[in-house]
Length: 326
Image (cartoon, rainbow, N blue to C red):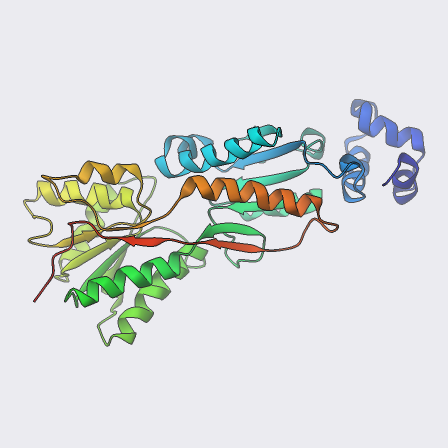
């Protein structure tokens, strides 16, 4: 258990200076204060009793996460466990903070796609963190996410066994280094090649998650390739695609098959007489729960920075939006 004198020795300052940094930070320079607080965190001063009392939730865009059905459920799972464990929460809609504003937290949960500069700051603060829902591009840091690769494999195998040979894919616009972009596109191409089907890049197109009107552009590009099925990277894109195709008098699944991914509540709008969506089902509430428990384990471990990737299962959910081709 570290004491004030241990921090003072490590920072080459007096014990009284350490006390000021912790209890009256406005009394010393910001540079010296941040140095002392980071060292105190590193030495475990703020977790003397090996308990987790306060967690920081960070969002790149809180409004989008909170309003979106998928991450709304993730947040529910996070809050459920925090409440059960009697852990206090601090929420930030960005990470433009200095150490003084967050040092009382035992660790951080980054929700959704997290910018590299956020991760760099967390590392500089020497605070344990977990990426919830979206790993970093290199899959380097501790994360909890779904088995997207297995889910897409199962979906494509089902489509191929149903007679589909020309399959299109719509993914969200992202850097080609993005973890999920690489996983989805790589799995798509590998599965089609394994089944000796065409995996032309023309059968893969993107839309902007922030501007779903771009789904119409993506659909136009794919339809020029005459696919029998369009796979969407999530149910939200699938739902928008469904309504666009309906407006164009293209019937699902008679004229073209359509699939989603995630099994969010939006897909319930595709109930009969409209076809129920074939999708890959996940449990975002459990994702949130697991992220909290993983962070707690990291905080209570001796190092606090053990990197572990927890990959949660998904399963194929067959609806009525895929036509069997004889």
